[in-house]
Image 1 (cartoon, rainbow, N blue to C red):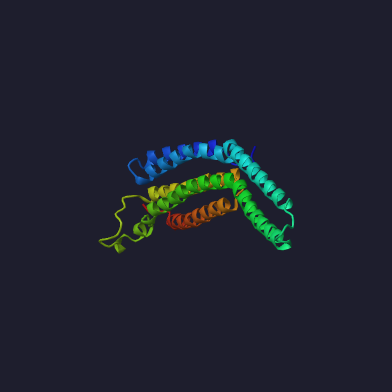
Image 2: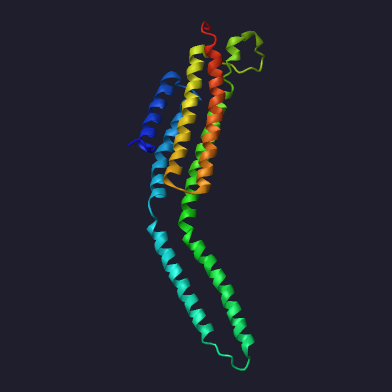
Length: 234
């Protein structure tokens, strides 16, 4: 029961988080980011279903194509085997065998291409979804960039171009915490793709998103720690 991620649980957690952000910061861009991530989570469900189940249309086509290739290869070698020395002697037969060997190599490449079609189609589908999640991770990071606790700690150091923030210490802490949660849930949605598809390219893409989200979350928690060191800050 607890050996793999469940999309429905991730979706429910995301919906709850989106409500929490909207209730706390109703007009913020972060609430819209959370809503967009909820939409992505809903659209991820059919993608994961396609990744986990066989594509029988593609497999049928591949079987028919491979059968045709094998029949053609068999006919080619039967033709070469039926050649006699004739007037041209042994040279023509050897040339025919050399040509057949080259054709066999190309036929093997064609069969490999056909066998891997389904995996490559699923990989492209998964990578398209993962690119959206990677973009969300960067967008969350953009929202927390200007949420600097130094503006609260030392207000006198503000300049004319400093970000205009009306958040209290508590609100800033909650905002940063919400950003960290969004990063974690984005990472979990990415991990679901690797859970449904054992492809090295997809696994690398998922790992990159997880590392990126973890690094950005660490930066956020450094800000939260700074806030927590000043308990009496208003």
